[in-house]
Image (cartoon, rainbow, N blue to C red; front, side, top):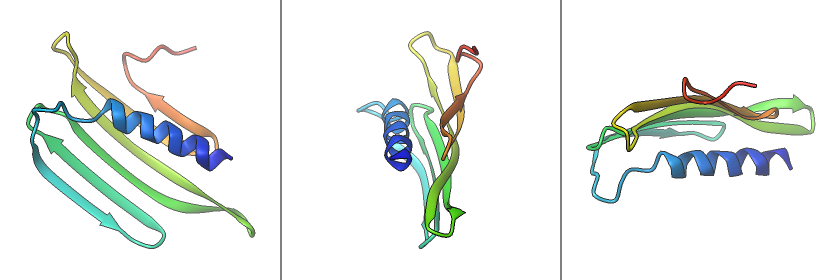
Length: 102
């Protein structure tokens, strides 16, 4: 169940960081293995994203995907926004100067 929540949060983060329709990918790298992966890309509109993930053993019968990364984009106001995040068995945990803290 927690894996589904993590994947849902990551999907939302990827959608938010997706390049504009007229942006072109100017660099892209990825490395996918059986128990870990990493990727990064940059687009012509200044959007950048990087992420790495690996399996973490919670107990002998349960593994969890542990992910960390960041993305940045230029907002409608012309400012660059950067979000760093961790997603693991504790959920999606984003951080950024513009994100309110409780």
